[in-house]
Image (cartoon, rainbow, N blue to C red; front, top):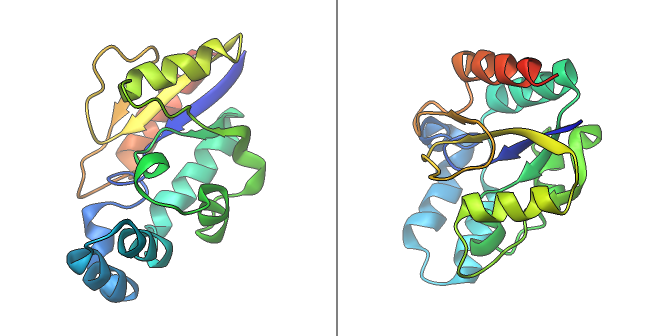
Length: 166
């Protein structure tokens, strides 16, 4: 079975605490004053993800053989090449699924979009790592806290679920 991690960005790789890092002062000011999609995109392109969260994500993929599929609202809200952004932030290319993005459907929930992705990848399964509860999600969900993101506790819960599915 192909295992994937459906990945949110805000509250997972970019927890609230990451906005307090000195590297993110400029992007935080851009975001606070953003009045257009272009300004929001500029902030998203400049922001730095939490280094520990990225390291734990890479380790989780390494330990389980899972690949990453982005389910984050960043697919809808910013015009950033998410593959390039993830690579620039330290996510290893070998862990990015070749079909990296869940489909975007205007009237669908994130859970429904994950279901659409799974239906187009027969035999795939995995988990979702997100800071929001996803009602009706077709795979197990590992919740993060928005301010903490993907930390060691979340890593351990995700690892247990992915190993259970082997």
